[in-house]
Amino acid sequence: PTPMYFLLSHLAIIDISYASNNVPQMLANLVTQKRAISFVPCIMQTFLYLNLASTECLILVAMSYDRYVAICHPLHYTVIMSWTVCTVLATMCWSCGFFQALIHVLLLLRLPFCRSREVNQLFCELLSILKLACGDTWLNKVVIFATSVLVLVGPLCLVVVSYTHILWAILKIQSGEGRRKAFSTCSSHLCVVGLFFGCAMVVYMLPDSSQRGEKNKILSLFYSLFNPMLNPLIYTLR
Image 1 (cartoon, rainbow, N blue to C red):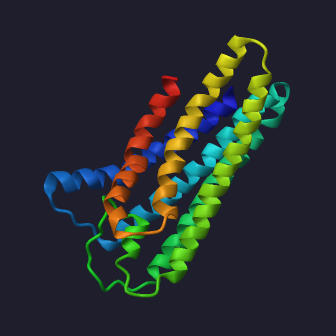
Image 2 (cartoon, rainbow, N blue to C red):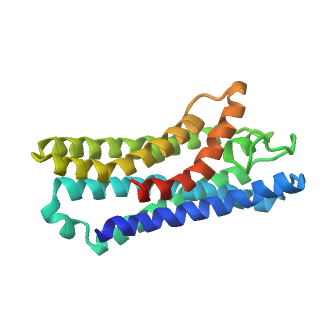
Image 3 (tube, one colour):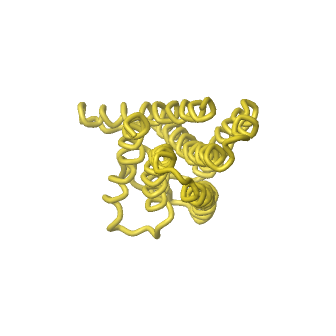
């Protein structure tokens, strides 16, 4: 169906942009051993990755709604998921991601940085930069937690509700072939949702500790590099 591929195209754009934002600097650090980045490019990298990560969360919710309509209301699918609805959903996802990232960056720019200039991360990640600030970061941390609830927990709850209805509808299907096709349609999306939301929630919602530093690096690498690489494989080889 066209709406599904329309939303998949947005997910593909996000994944390509995600990798393009982070990977070149990572490779440059590994090859040249010159692990330096100026302040403005670092802030831009932070803004872009926050923007793209938030947008991906919301696009995944829109995709789960698309699957819900396709399986639970197949006769009304073309009416409910019209071109206008798809365009509005995509625009809202990108707009919310943009403004959420802008708020974080503006709050970050108000802080003085007088500690170590070493970012203990593979790229300019928000929490790692925040640790370098010598001002009061209480407001930043509150906003990070609040947006994590809005962008991670809220969308994940919507996905769970959608797939609860989908599972109930699938169990009502009489034919084994029909059930198999329905599960096949949804399994790829569930894999992507589980990988992305799981890593992001561990990084941004669990209490911070010194022991979690290296684990966060691995998780950040996973959802910023490996997840964009895995998404095309998951959706094409399902």
